[in-house]
Length: 324
Ligand SMILES: NC(=O)c1ccc[n+]([C@@H]2O[C@H](COP(=O)([O-])OP(=O)(O)OC[C@H]3O[C@@H](n4cnc5c(N)ncnc54)[C@H](O)[C@@H]3O)[C@@H](O)[C@H]2O)c1
Image (tube, rainbow, N blue to C red):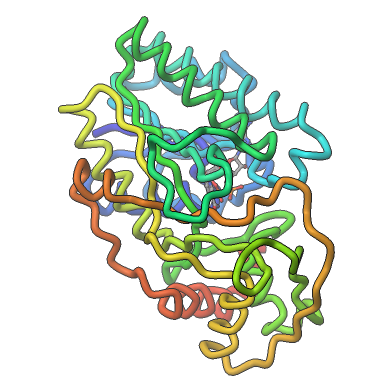
């Protein structure tokens, strides 16, 4: 298939673009590089630098050839920042997505795969199912839920076939590509920055959550397993008009457990300090991904947290300054 990957110079989009090429698809990456890196997009992909806010640029790239699918990773991703500056999130993630969906629909693209998130759900003590209440606790999650709903209307009115994949915490790396957000707010890369001597300690934001050790619990899913789900979703859209599913391992780890696992993997003491809660953090988000397993035939290949951290650590050790 011929696939446009919006946000393909970012962490997850770059790895999915690479896996698409390896599976024999043609790929064009569209990315403004506001958060991504040219080097994160695979060399075998065509690259167009542009923003989702530039409708003419989107029409031009989608007019270059007949595209079978659009995969949409381009967004701002910091839940905490979205609670300080919500307008930046609604403008980029919602208005930008409307432009891309409109352009894809106008160009007759039949399949659309969207990066959604666990942040569409409220905290829950048990693994979350797709039928659970949708109640984002931060503006970032609200932007993703809005785009899911917009896609639903384009499905109904324009016949756009779409998959909304609700990732839980993406992590891990391949040999060539890893997590390098600007700024970094994700736990595993932050912990590894301590190991690399780039920060003195790791902050635990909130030690008074209603969880066994008081820290937030998340489901960590390897980025390679996420990428695999995208390839499966692309095919599944031939049969299914709309797909909404969780992507996670179904196992929850607290912040303290992740830090302990990183200590074991790296052999570094990783000093940790408790800090106040960050606005917009849910206490517990763990996936029930049985729908993705049944519908897509998806089976995570690297579910073990230690293996995930080992892959992340291998990439950070070989790329101590990321792509810079
Ligand atoms: N990382 C996670 O754990 C996680 C979890 C759930 C969902 N997601 C979603 O997955 C997607 C990818 O996340 P990531 O971690 O790879 O983030 P990332 O910041 O590494 O990648 C996002 C990419 O989109 C580009 N971009 C942003 N706004 C743009 C715009 N207006 N026009 C063109 N390009 C633009 C950035 O330059 C960047 O390359 C995001 O939509 C995010 O919300 C990520």
